[in-house]
Image (tube, rainbow, N blue to C red; front, top):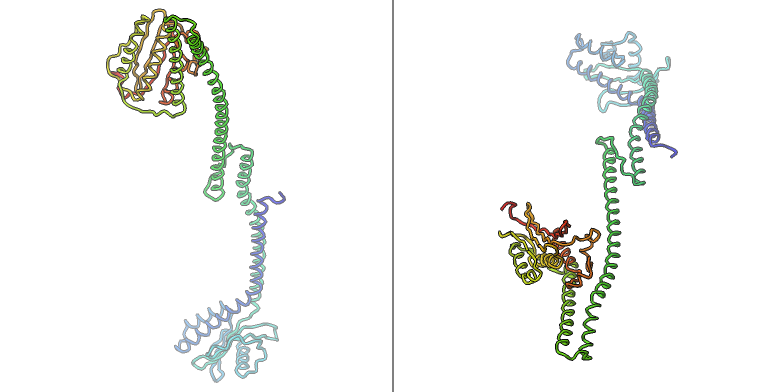
Amino acid sequence: MRWSLKQEIASIFIILMTSTIFLNWFINNSFLERYYIENKENVLLSAYRFINQAGNEGSMLTEDFYLQLQKIASTGNISILVMNTSGQVRMTTVNEKDILKTQLFNNIYGKNSDVVSILSEGNGQNYIIQKTRDSRINTDYLEIWGSFENGNWFIMRTALESIRESVQIANRFLGYIGLFAVMISALIIWNVSEQISKPILELAHISKRMTNLDFEAKYTRGGNDEIAILGNHINQLSETLEQTISDLKTANNELKTDIEKKEQIDEMRKEFLSNVSHELKTPIALVQGYAEGLKECINDDAESREFYCDVIMDEANKMNKMVQKLLTLNQIEFGNDVITLERFDITTLIKGIIQSSDILIKQKEVKVIFKEQNPIYVWADEFKIEEVFTNYFSNALNHVANEKIIDVKITRKTNTIRVSVFNTGEKIPEKDIDNIWIKFYKVDKARTREYGGSGIGLSIVKAIMDSLNKKCGVINYDNGVEFWFELDSNQPQNI
């Protein structure tokens, strides 16, 4: 950068100030003398009007008039002479009155050869303003002569040399003052331009840091001027850019996550197809095998045929249940299932499911504990919560062991209740805790096959609770496993 902003500002102001002072000097030198002459004309006219008025009023012989006349003559540097029509001097402000008297006579009779130019002829009044030059002393005069209304003649004049000298002094003084003013102003402007350029350079430094995505630098000078406003806007721009970049990075991260999820979904789809194929392969093989046996009449007795038919029906029923569960899970996961929030008694729902499982409970000789008797109302989809509890309770019946106890509890909290289903038996291995909610995942595949499980039930539970935006989980104990889920309740904690 050849010229800094400070140098440019200082140079512009110094040039402007120097030009202004030079212009004033030029105007003074060219027009000040003419202005002074016009001003002197007005002074001479004022003196003429004053004396003319005094002559009309008859106050020319008074002391006040004389004092006022002397004041006009001295302040205006005017020589005055008044004479009557007989040529007698009535009044004068100078000692050498003969010179003025001779000049007046020459003007009256048109014999004045010293006249340089006529400036004004009175506009209908009896006076003439002219510029003359005394060749004897080589001096120019501005004079006014003529007659008053009372008939007296007059002449008044002032030397122009004093005007020229005043002009020269004024121009010289203006030159000295101008030079001094330029020097002082240059120092002041240099400091002022530095004060102006500093915050601008600071803003330039901040903007440079912003180009490198460094948004920590802030404009801190404060103030209410335009630079301060610009600084505040740059601060806001910095914050906005930082937030925008942060949002872009967040969006990019989310996009990356979405891509990973898509890849994961593709893997899950492949795994799903593989699992479905695997799960259907065995029952289809059994159905096919026993059906072929029936067709080929491997066993002719009725009991064998009935056994073959029971196996086929049982396997077909298992496949049907698995397909229904897959359809239910698919609807929930893809948001095609309608969620209906309603207020219902969870206690009654649990009791109904336990009662409907009474035959299985007695067959397995399981002791079911559920002490809650009072109604507890919750907000949820009753049909889906029935599905959740049924899955928990069925799993508990299928995995209960040792003391064969199933303990169902409802725990009250501030705005929620927790329903838990505990069964005695083996704990779930820690490595499988997070995987039991995945479709087709089985901790003990042989046992799951034994009771006809497909590994979909807990996936449905997780999908339902996610659709309701509620939590569910599992807890291992030394003597068994507890599954739980939570729901909203408007009932107080202490009933």
